[in-house]
Amino acid sequence: MKHKVTTTLALLSILITTNAIVRPSYAIAWSPDMRITWNTETDWMPSIIQASDGKIWVVWHSYRMGNADLFYKIYDESQVPQWSVETRLTSNSTDDRSPSIMQADDGKIWVVWERGMDIYYKTSSDNGATWSPETSFVVSPVQDDYDPSVLQASNGTIWVVWERRMSIYYTTSADNGETWSENTPLIDTGYTEWHPTVMETSDNVIWVVWDSDRLFDQSDIYCKSYDGATWSADTRLTFDSATDVAPSITQTTEGTIWIVWASWRLDNLDIYYMTDSVPQHLHDIAIFSVAHHPNVAVVYKGLNVSIEVVPQNQGMEDEFIQVYCYANLTLIDDQIFHLSAGQLAPVNFTWNTLNVNPGNYSIIAVIQIIGETDTDPADNTVFDGAFEVRIPGDADFSGLVEIDDFVSWAENVGKTSDQLSISAYSDFDNNGYVEMADFYKWRENIGNHYP
Image 1 (cartoon, rainbow, N blue to C red):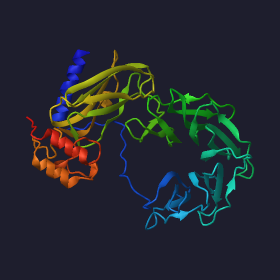
Image 2: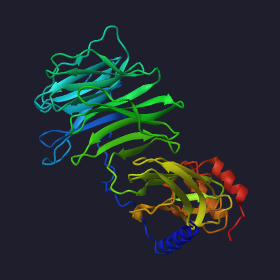
Image 3: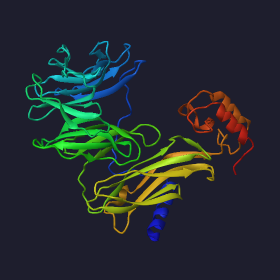
Image 4: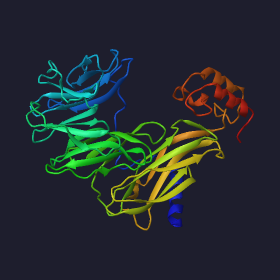
């Protein structure tokens, strides 16, 4: 063990010296974030499909007309501009929210959404030129129905799942919506069961994923499946102590199931994902992700930096693994824990910078299997960006807290941290804003210097 850690530190020294950046071997190149709405009011809860003609449809709800209505845009690569104008789909005085969109095998575009406390849908057979009347899944009495998701299975059956009074229900239609089955409870535990999404895999199995707070008073992601005869038991998918909510599920053409969701693991909601990729090696672990918070260019001494390392067991055997977390070559901490085959789980560290020397730092995560040899160790070391640690009040990183730093503070009062120049970084308490508290922090530290 000691020999392996020593070898790892030597490797880290080489990598830092050469400014190398190590990323997981399975990393995907994504485009930049691209904006498609510019309204000053809230646009919320988008749903997306690609139609059989190749066009991309996006539908969402917006408060731009005073209450929530549905809008949509269509992306056509052959047109200039490629995005259509925004089209209003609903105009009811009651809020229309949480749309879900799909295309049936007869070419119809379906949009299903919540209105008030009921679920509605409408369809278009001519690419949105005209739409059918709005139709509700009539329930008497009203049952507090929210968050629908719609799917047409390969056998032609249309499925709609939704949330009703903290339980999950579904209905089906075998005749393209002419008639519907009874509203059937799928998950009813007495706890909060929310945000269902439905999907069919290539083997004709229906999957439903949702979030539930049935354990430990926190929300986790669950799934269950239907093989045409019986429903499986509920399966818990996430195990973090933070809240995981609002999942969505799909299957790629090569058969991998992807699930994405929102998680409150680092003081705000971020997006996470997992896959059901089949393990290829007997012993194979990888670092799925590394993140630190606050995720800023400058950290002032004394701040606690939260670090989340997410290892994944990509092998076919259960493993005990050891996770090391470094700031440059300094070990912050290490943890040992168990991962089942295919499982990923977050490991959390806290780095107290109070006694850290000012300078440039990178967070580095290293993992190893205890007692076994990893067959694919290339993804066992991951760097998480770079940032500077400074003396509180030293806005320009001169090593001395002085009047120039006060000038930087005065020029930047009212700005957020992402608006600040690295050479005039006057958010001295790292709370995201330049305000009076930062002045007091500068005053407390004036005259301090390093070295």
